[in-house]
Image (tube, rainbow, N blue to C red; front, side, top):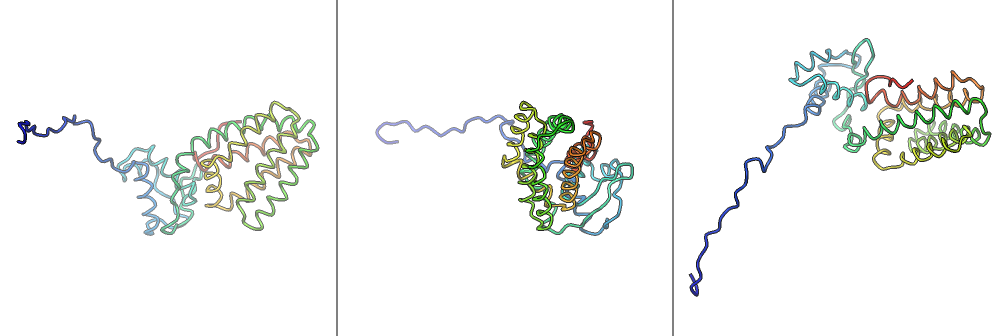
Length: 258
């Protein structure tokens, strides 16, 4: 001791046992995804093979069926497997080491993207129904110009060009409906597509499978043709098909939005 000071032994603060969480094991969904992906890479399942049923995979992996379902959905988004309703899940592609990794931004934004897509469908279905009756020529011109850019995006495999043309097409569609309130709603929803997280979802969706790009251009053309022909059924079916094609790879089935 110095100068009569009293030495005080340092004491550790009492920390309750629950202050720290134990190290968590990987999420069961991610574990299931990794295991299924590794089995495909090792050749246990070849392209065209059907995977075991969901219940069997859950038992083999020691996880719940919901975890297996989510894992298969992620692999379908990445273009590794294909869900054929009524038949099962089939291997579509054997990815390399750097493939089939769904970006973190995609996983974070997935629910936001689905919610936005559903809202856009509800609004645009009404717009299409109005446009079939009497479309604004300026809106049709913009849709037609956007389709030309989409065709060019296919020729050049330019996803960025397609995404820009896609927004332009839907802006034209909003104008074609000749309802300023619905147009304002549609424009506000379209602006959300440029949010970084949503943009990453849209870009990744087409990068992993260029056939989706081809299909998207086709459904946009059907929407336009249905409106120009005044064919309500064709136009409404096309707008549903367009949005269903976007959502089905994420949720594993066509949405019940009709």
